Length: 584
Image (cartoon, rainbow, N blue to C red; front, side, top):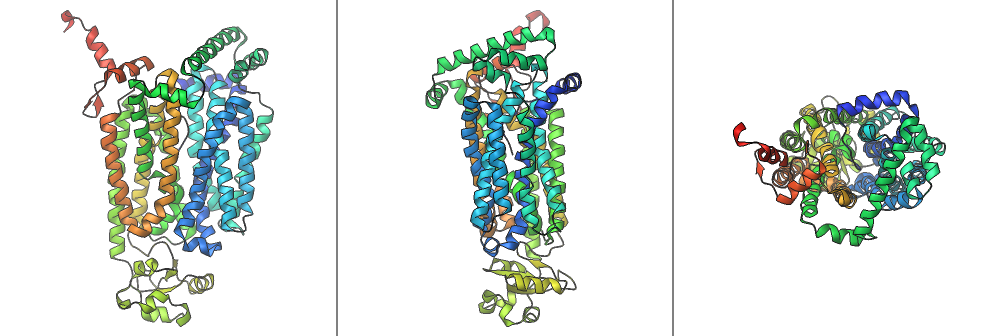
């Protein structure tokens, strides 16, 4: 969902290719560190497909929604911890050592997951890979930005963000590749250790960040690295700029005090920072409460809710949504500077709300037309296989597939001729599931046969198209622009923690919500939260497009009021002040 973000314009990308072609060493540095973004994206996406097979191997996981949620969300909990310690490790030991340690932790977590004999061991592995992801999400952007020429820094850091969505897409391809291989989910999760191992080996041959070395008074080492990055005639100017920047940074640290609490107190005393935090935290919370990580973490499960019980089909359709997310990231890079941050988010939210309401309507209709349970079909498998709740129900003749799945430890075995015809309500067990499938029937535990399934998948794809270019990347961009320079680190950090924490809340409760409310009402709930988010962004988030940091600070100092889709920006006021009477 996704770490700090620096926006690059088209000129930066063009310049990036030219400079990287002349100096391949720059691309080597950034791509090696960018594998951290790839790991982040891969871990986000891989669990969604692996979960389908984990449920099949561990019956207790299939029966307990909270256990599925915990397996998914503990990586997020680990990432929060990893991000918290990752910043300190990066500052104290260096960006390179932080990335190497992140690789070791991630690789260890991948191995633990691959060999997990029980769900609790799998959860431990998920926490470890989460810690690795969190550490890498802090160290990788720092390493790239501090090892890049200023004029292409935005393009290189933006490419790191693009690798995150690329990693998600790759994870779905890997999931599909291992669906027929013995061990399925163990390969899906274990192979994640390979990129971490590759990054570890490549990082050993790369230097530390020149900026970090300069701060440690290792001037000669910093200069030798800059000589590999810049032409000889630019090195001295870069050393002077680096010296000035580090001295200014240390002066700010001296002014704000040492430690988190003194910096926080100083930040909260400023009206400008309070308003910036309100806007920055708002966009991060809304990004999560639109429900995006329910799609990223549970996409194949949602596809099964829509009636596609086949795991391969669910994964294949989920691959499409992941690909759309990747394409949306590219669209955002090309157009957000033209149309503005605020407008992009508000238009994005309109589309998100419409898609969520449509998904709710589709699932309502699917529930209303679900196949009934046939006593004849159920008894066909033998009395010992019948769902106990169905046998004891006073009005079992009114049961349908949804009634069956809501009963504890029960599954629906569809009719062999036509899945929409009456089927059987049976006990959940590996043997009974195998018997059902041997008769060329489909076994349902998450959703029911439906003729509206493709509509649900279509709206899911539209949801991603609406989300990715706007609410997907713009909140990180807003947080990179809205804080005064000396408070940018602490402001962005607080907003990022809010994002990760909300991510954890959403991913830990999604399946519980669908069990309690049903799929339809769960999507309607997220539509309602998205509408509240639209109102919040409309009233508290200003437009920062085209403004310098000083202009943003001046705008926050004066305050602002919404006017249509866009605020009357500080640039407009400056222009008005500079218009002479004779020119009116």
